[in-house]
Image (cartoon, rainbow, N blue to C red):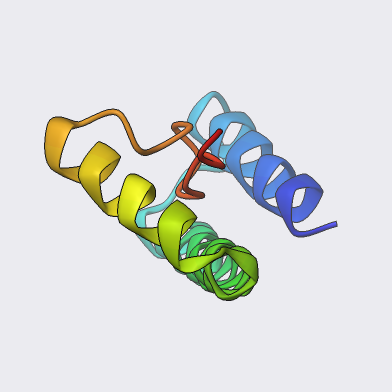
Length: 84
């Protein structure tokens, strides 16, 4: 739902930029909504990652931390990969 809202705001900005209705104020309003949506998504990702971390065994946590140090610990979406 949050992702869809973010995509809609990006589309709204694109549509505004490619129209004669463009004004800096109108763009600023949409950009502010994009920032809010991105912040909400980052919060959801952080909460999900923390919930996942809390489910890990001590051994899995250690492996995850080792992966973080070597740069292999993220799936690219802000959520750590599950250690095997």
